[in-house]
Image (cartoon, rainbow, N blue to C red; front, side):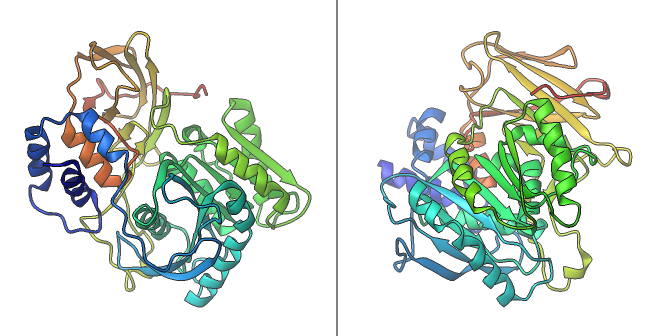
Length: 428
């Protein structure tokens, strides 16, 4: 079988827009093994990205609007605005910047669209200068869990229109879009190279969630005269981030609830300096009760149905994955700090309220030719050679539709005892 045919088989399996076929993964793996391919070979196929099928009417240097977008995870359809920079070259991988607009969670469709159009226009000159493809989706339901589906579905669509660099996808937004950017940094930080919340956010220091911001860099702007307590919250978070040495810049500007245009080139330069690193030496994870994002708001139940077999994965933090635990006491969270010791080929886990977890591994993280040792709360829980597994490689790409989320094997681990030692502080 030639390379093009193999790539078509891989693309067909990984696409989330195609119906699941029984035993599709096992059949594909059998074909790949019969062809003598290894994880390294399959990774090279995946590095080319999905097969492209862009519409015929895409134009560089022109704002394209009200393009239909169907969510993958529920029956909600919206639209988005798109800008392709003037210097776009189809043969080179491009960066993608998704822009979340402001407003509220009960906007009319037309008002949401006009707000999205307004939001993207601020970035057009930046896109031409730095080569970003811009996309601004509209939402008449806010940026809650439906928002995660909108953003995920938009990424999935655009990476089949353009050759995108999976490690150069970025998120920004103002006001309600700023809230989206903060929450995305917390809960889906491993989707992005970096994020840029603007005039948004709540006091995540008070909520005890700041440690999760270690998983993604960020550039924040807010005005000194913000309404709704935004300035106070951002100042408190700035102090915490600076004290812990995280890769975050928090800029307070003279003004109110506005976009500070002089900061946009600085945000773009920050993005340029921060591609996503899925193989970072340290990750932090926290988990509650749910394993997937669904819609908690009863008010939308009569409008939207979530697809039960297409959840938005929750609990993934680069190469660490946590699972729901319905036995957690109210107000308790699982917390895990995972660190590499590459020289010794060790992984050190510090876990609180955690009974099981998974580690997704790649030769960039650990040496597959030597025994890997894993310690949890000071106790050796694993010591073996790792076996590459094409099924893990492909199923992970498919689950997230993320062609840069490349891992050669997965270890499912039990934490001895009750995983209860308290982790008081994360070391950045």
